Image (cartoon, rainbow, N blue to C red; front, side, top):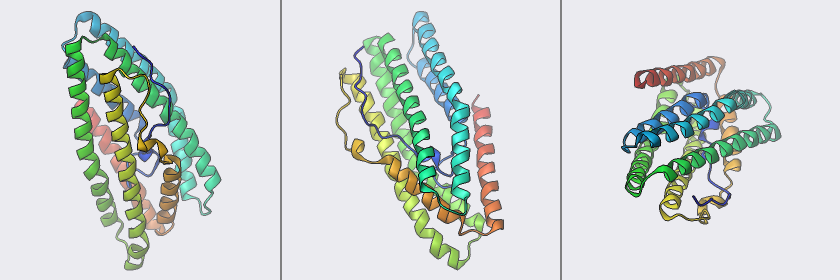
Length: 263
Protein backbone atom coordinates (compact mmCIF):
# COMPACT_ATOMS: atom_id res chain seq x y z
CA UNK A 1 0.00 0.00 0.00
CA UNK A 2 1.38 3.37 -0.97
CA UNK A 3 1.84 5.90 1.79
CA UNK A 4 0.10 9.27 1.87
CA UNK A 5 2.18 12.37 2.39
CA UNK A 6 1.20 14.27 5.56
CA UNK A 7 -0.11 17.72 4.71
CA UNK A 8 -2.55 20.28 5.98
CA UNK A 9 -6.08 18.94 6.03
CA UNK A 10 -9.39 20.47 6.90
CA UNK A 11 -10.29 19.28 10.37
CA UNK A 12 -13.90 19.84 11.26
CA UNK A 13 -13.75 21.85 14.48
CA UNK A 14 -17.49 21.81 14.94
CA UNK A 15 -17.06 19.35 17.79
CA UNK A 16 -15.18 21.88 19.91
CA UNK A 17 -17.96 24.44 20.14
CA UNK A 18 -21.21 24.48 22.04
CA UNK A 19 -23.32 21.52 20.95
CA UNK A 20 -26.56 23.44 20.91
CA UNK A 21 -25.10 25.86 18.39
CA UNK A 22 -23.10 23.70 16.05
CA UNK A 23 -22.53 20.12 17.18
CA UNK A 24 -22.15 18.11 20.36
CA UNK A 25 -18.86 18.94 22.00
CA UNK A 26 -19.70 16.49 24.71
CA UNK A 27 -20.33 13.49 22.46
CA UNK A 28 -16.76 12.54 21.62
CA UNK A 29 -17.11 9.11 23.17
CA UNK A 30 -20.41 8.46 21.42
CA UNK A 31 -18.92 9.56 18.11
CA UNK A 32 -15.99 7.21 18.57
CA UNK A 33 -18.31 4.28 19.18
CA UNK A 34 -20.61 5.31 16.35
CA UNK A 35 -17.71 5.52 13.92
CA UNK A 36 -16.51 2.03 14.82
CA UNK A 37 -20.07 0.66 14.70
CA UNK A 38 -20.39 2.14 11.21
CA UNK A 39 -17.12 0.49 10.21
CA UNK A 40 -18.35 -2.90 11.36
CA UNK A 41 -21.63 -2.33 9.49
CA UNK A 42 -19.69 -1.45 6.34
CA UNK A 43 -17.63 -4.63 6.57
CA UNK A 44 -20.79 -6.71 6.71
CA UNK A 45 -21.72 -5.31 3.29
CA UNK A 46 -18.43 -6.35 1.66
CA UNK A 47 -18.93 -10.13 1.75
CA UNK A 48 -15.56 -10.73 3.38
CA UNK A 49 -13.88 -14.09 3.76
CA UNK A 50 -13.33 -15.35 7.29
CA UNK A 51 -9.67 -14.37 7.13
CA UNK A 52 -10.55 -10.87 5.92
CA UNK A 53 -13.13 -10.49 8.71
CA UNK A 54 -10.61 -11.41 11.38
CA UNK A 55 -7.94 -9.09 10.02
CA UNK A 56 -10.35 -6.18 9.50
CA UNK A 57 -11.85 -6.60 12.98
CA UNK A 58 -8.36 -6.55 14.48
CA UNK A 59 -7.61 -3.29 12.65
CA UNK A 60 -10.82 -1.67 13.91
CA UNK A 61 -10.23 -2.94 17.44
CA UNK A 62 -6.73 -1.45 17.51
CA UNK A 63 -8.11 1.87 16.31
CA UNK A 64 -10.77 1.80 19.02
CA UNK A 65 -8.15 1.24 21.73
CA UNK A 66 -6.24 4.32 20.57
CA UNK A 67 -9.44 6.38 20.51
CA UNK A 68 -10.42 5.30 24.01
CA UNK A 69 -6.98 6.26 25.33
CA UNK A 70 -7.47 9.84 24.10
CA UNK A 71 -11.09 10.07 25.21
CA UNK A 72 -10.45 11.38 28.74
CA UNK A 73 -7.97 14.00 27.51
CA UNK A 74 -10.34 15.08 24.76
CA UNK A 75 -13.25 15.44 27.18
CA UNK A 76 -11.18 17.37 29.73
CA UNK A 77 -10.05 19.84 27.07
CA UNK A 78 -13.63 20.34 25.90
CA UNK A 79 -14.83 21.03 29.42
CA UNK A 80 -12.00 23.49 30.01
CA UNK A 81 -12.83 25.26 26.75
CA UNK A 82 -16.47 25.56 27.77
CA UNK A 83 -15.41 27.09 31.09
CA UNK A 84 -13.25 29.60 29.25
CA UNK A 85 -16.18 30.56 27.04
CA UNK A 86 -18.28 31.25 30.14
CA UNK A 87 -15.65 33.40 31.88
CA UNK A 88 -16.55 37.06 32.30
CA UNK A 89 -13.28 38.12 30.66
CA UNK A 90 -12.41 36.82 27.21
CA UNK A 91 -8.93 35.23 27.21
CA UNK A 92 -8.09 34.59 23.56
CA UNK A 93 -4.59 33.28 24.30
CA UNK A 94 -5.92 30.57 26.60
CA UNK A 95 -8.74 29.69 24.21
CA UNK A 96 -6.28 29.45 21.32
CA UNK A 97 -4.05 27.13 23.34
CA UNK A 98 -6.95 24.81 24.20
CA UNK A 99 -8.17 24.77 20.61
CA UNK A 100 -4.65 23.98 19.44
CA UNK A 101 -4.48 21.00 21.80
CA UNK A 102 -7.89 19.76 20.68
CA UNK A 103 -6.89 20.28 17.04
CA UNK A 104 -3.79 18.12 17.57
CA UNK A 105 -5.90 15.31 19.05
CA UNK A 106 -8.38 15.55 16.19
CA UNK A 107 -5.57 15.47 13.65
CA UNK A 108 -4.10 12.35 15.24
CA UNK A 109 -7.53 10.73 15.29
CA UNK A 110 -8.15 11.59 11.64
CA UNK A 111 -4.77 10.19 10.62
CA UNK A 112 -5.45 6.99 12.58
CA UNK A 113 -8.83 6.65 10.90
CA UNK A 114 -7.29 7.05 7.45
CA UNK A 115 -4.56 4.56 8.34
CA UNK A 116 -7.18 2.01 9.40
CA UNK A 117 -9.10 2.49 6.17
CA UNK A 118 -5.89 2.05 4.17
CA UNK A 119 -5.13 -1.19 5.98
CA UNK A 120 -8.64 -2.50 5.38
CA UNK A 121 -8.45 -1.38 1.75
CA UNK A 122 -5.29 -3.46 1.30
CA UNK A 123 -7.18 -6.57 2.44
CA UNK A 124 -9.88 -6.23 -0.19
CA UNK A 125 -10.20 -7.73 -3.64
CA UNK A 126 -10.73 -5.32 -6.59
CA UNK A 127 -14.47 -6.07 -6.53
CA UNK A 128 -14.66 -5.40 -2.80
CA UNK A 129 -12.70 -2.17 -3.24
CA UNK A 130 -15.31 -0.96 -5.72
CA UNK A 131 -18.03 -1.74 -3.17
CA UNK A 132 -16.00 -0.04 -0.43
CA UNK A 133 -15.85 3.18 -2.46
CA UNK A 134 -19.60 3.03 -3.16
CA UNK A 135 -20.36 2.66 0.55
CA UNK A 136 -18.05 5.52 1.55
CA UNK A 137 -19.47 7.80 -1.14
CA UNK A 138 -22.99 6.99 0.04
CA UNK A 139 -21.97 7.85 3.60
CA UNK A 140 -20.60 11.20 2.47
CA UNK A 141 -23.79 12.02 0.57
CA UNK A 142 -25.95 11.19 3.60
CA UNK A 143 -23.69 13.19 5.90
CA UNK A 144 -23.94 16.20 3.61
CA UNK A 145 -27.74 16.13 3.77
CA UNK A 146 -27.80 15.73 7.55
CA UNK A 147 -25.24 18.47 8.12
CA UNK A 148 -27.28 20.93 6.09
CA UNK A 149 -30.29 20.61 8.40
CA UNK A 150 -29.22 19.39 11.81
CA UNK A 151 -27.40 22.44 13.19
CA UNK A 152 -30.01 24.89 11.94
CA UNK A 153 -32.91 22.95 13.46
CA UNK A 154 -31.13 22.60 16.79
CA UNK A 155 -30.40 26.31 16.85
CA UNK A 156 -34.02 27.26 16.10
CA UNK A 157 -35.23 24.97 18.87
CA UNK A 158 -32.78 26.47 21.35
CA UNK A 159 -33.71 30.07 20.51
CA UNK A 160 -37.40 29.26 21.03
CA UNK A 161 -36.67 27.81 24.47
CA UNK A 162 -34.58 30.79 25.55
CA UNK A 163 -37.50 33.22 25.13
CA UNK A 164 -35.22 36.08 24.13
CA UNK A 165 -36.24 39.69 24.51
CA UNK A 166 -36.29 41.88 21.41
CA UNK A 167 -33.09 43.55 22.56
CA UNK A 168 -31.39 40.17 23.04
CA UNK A 169 -32.53 39.00 19.61
CA UNK A 170 -31.01 42.09 18.02
CA UNK A 171 -27.68 41.23 19.64
CA UNK A 172 -27.71 37.44 19.38
CA UNK A 173 -29.21 36.71 15.96
CA UNK A 174 -26.24 38.13 13.98
CA UNK A 175 -23.90 36.09 16.20
CA UNK A 176 -25.84 32.91 15.48
CA UNK A 177 -25.81 33.79 11.80
CA UNK A 178 -22.01 34.04 11.81
CA UNK A 179 -21.77 30.74 13.70
CA UNK A 180 -23.94 29.12 11.05
CA UNK A 181 -21.75 30.47 8.26
CA UNK A 182 -18.65 29.11 10.00
CA UNK A 183 -20.34 25.78 10.64
CA UNK A 184 -21.26 25.36 6.99
CA UNK A 185 -17.74 26.22 5.87
CA UNK A 186 -16.09 23.76 8.26
CA UNK A 187 -18.52 20.99 7.43
CA UNK A 188 -18.03 21.51 3.71
CA UNK A 189 -14.27 21.34 4.18
CA UNK A 190 -14.60 18.10 6.11
CA UNK A 191 -16.72 16.52 3.39
CA UNK A 192 -14.29 17.61 0.69
CA UNK A 193 -11.40 16.11 2.64
CA UNK A 194 -13.26 12.80 2.89
CA UNK A 195 -13.97 12.82 -0.84
CA UNK A 196 -10.31 13.53 -1.57
CA UNK A 197 -9.23 10.59 0.58
CA UNK A 198 -11.60 8.24 -1.24
CA UNK A 199 -10.07 9.40 -4.53
CA UNK A 200 -6.62 8.66 -3.12
CA UNK A 201 -7.67 5.10 -2.37
CA UNK A 202 -9.21 4.70 -5.82
CA UNK A 203 -6.26 6.15 -7.71
CA UNK A 204 -3.44 4.82 -5.54
CA UNK A 205 -1.90 8.29 -5.25
CA UNK A 206 1.18 8.86 -3.11
CA UNK A 207 0.52 12.47 -2.22
CA UNK A 208 -2.59 14.17 -0.93
CA UNK A 209 -3.52 16.53 -3.79
CA UNK A 210 -3.37 20.25 -3.21
CA UNK A 211 -6.81 21.30 -2.09
CA UNK A 212 -8.20 24.80 -1.52
CA UNK A 213 -9.27 23.71 1.96
CA UNK A 214 -5.62 23.38 3.00
CA UNK A 215 -5.26 27.17 2.85
CA UNK A 216 -8.16 27.80 5.23
CA UNK A 217 -7.11 28.67 8.78
CA UNK A 218 -9.57 26.42 10.60
CA UNK A 219 -8.05 27.22 13.98
CA UNK A 220 -8.82 30.92 13.53
CA UNK A 221 -12.40 30.01 12.64
CA UNK A 222 -12.64 27.90 15.79
CA UNK A 223 -11.35 30.78 17.93
CA UNK A 224 -13.86 33.09 16.27
CA UNK A 225 -16.63 30.59 17.05
CA UNK A 226 -15.58 30.44 20.69
CA UNK A 227 -15.65 34.24 20.88
CA UNK A 228 -19.11 34.35 19.31
CA UNK A 229 -20.33 31.84 21.88
CA UNK A 230 -18.75 33.89 24.67
CA UNK A 231 -20.71 36.93 23.52
CA UNK A 232 -23.93 34.93 23.21
CA UNK A 233 -23.51 33.42 26.67
CA UNK A 234 -23.03 36.81 28.31
CA UNK A 235 -26.05 38.27 26.53
CA UNK A 236 -28.26 35.75 28.36
CA UNK A 237 -29.52 36.24 31.89
CA UNK A 238 -28.92 33.63 34.60
CA UNK A 239 -32.23 31.87 33.99
CA UNK A 240 -31.61 31.67 30.24
CA UNK A 241 -28.12 30.31 30.87
CA UNK A 242 -29.65 27.52 32.96
CA UNK A 243 -32.12 26.81 30.15
CA UNK A 244 -29.22 26.70 27.73
CA UNK A 245 -27.37 24.12 29.84
CA UNK A 246 -30.50 22.02 30.36
CA UNK A 247 -30.95 21.98 26.59
CA UNK A 248 -27.37 20.73 26.16
CA UNK A 249 -27.91 18.04 28.80
CA UNK A 250 -31.06 16.92 27.00
CA UNK A 251 -29.18 16.73 23.71
CA UNK A 252 -26.54 14.52 25.35
CA UNK A 253 -29.21 12.28 26.84
CA UNK A 254 -31.02 11.91 23.51
CA UNK A 255 -27.82 11.03 21.67
CA UNK A 256 -26.99 8.30 24.18
CA UNK A 257 -30.55 7.01 23.98
CA UNK A 258 -30.43 6.88 20.18
CA UNK A 259 -27.16 5.01 20.29
CA UNK A 260 -28.66 2.52 22.73
CA UNK A 261 -31.51 1.85 20.31
CA UNK A 262 -29.02 1.22 17.48
CA UNK A 263 -27.02 -1.27 19.54
